Image 1 (cartoon, rainbow, N blue to C red):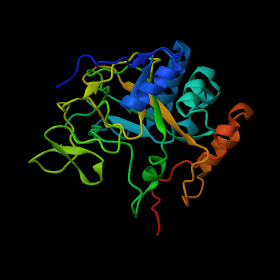
Image 2: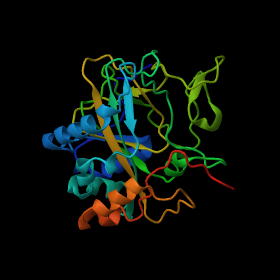
Image 3: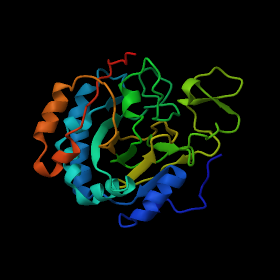
Image 4: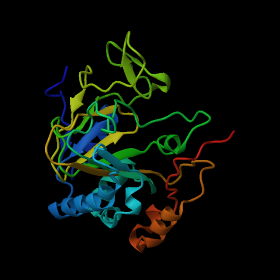
Length: 290
């Protein structure tokens, strides 16, 4: 069920720009080894702990996600001026002018992803969503052609609640895994003959666990299907990431710019101002109107 190797290279150093982009476009993902320094990793981990840690309501909550992390984390905002990171972001978008699309951070405690209530179960899914009325902010931001750029600050592996993906699942005509059918809207899939609920187990044909070290960059396309393993380790799993969209992309009428987003834009230094001038933040309560 789980391929131990793939018939192509998907791990690259930061200088292999063409290979990184080719792999992402052909297979829906790529991994860049040791893009961040150890100092970057430790400072980002500290921000995840500081800003997400207090959001745990009680001991039964095992996973917390912040969906606008760059607005809070000065260290993540610094990445907008970090040349190795932006060189890759620009290259995979063919040098187009870019705007910050969205960002997030996730703090998972041991046990997250299990059957317990509030455990942070994250079923197999694609970030892409249909713009069918009424749709919400996630559909707007996940339909821009953006590419996720994600850092697993404590590493990613099947034991510590790491990511799993399905290579080559990023195309519009991709068929569901053998023995499975898509849920409504193709957001996830379920085993044939069962209730049509998003599938959470890791025994999906063609899936691949993403194994990375702190400092590695995980790149995956907007449509690439991915899931998350149960966290069986003993230390929290910390991660964060962002995506960019072409500045020329028209999102259409959306929510008013949140105050937190305005403050973030105003706080950005001149060298990264061009990346946030069109930033719209997110309002999860917003719904489209015909």
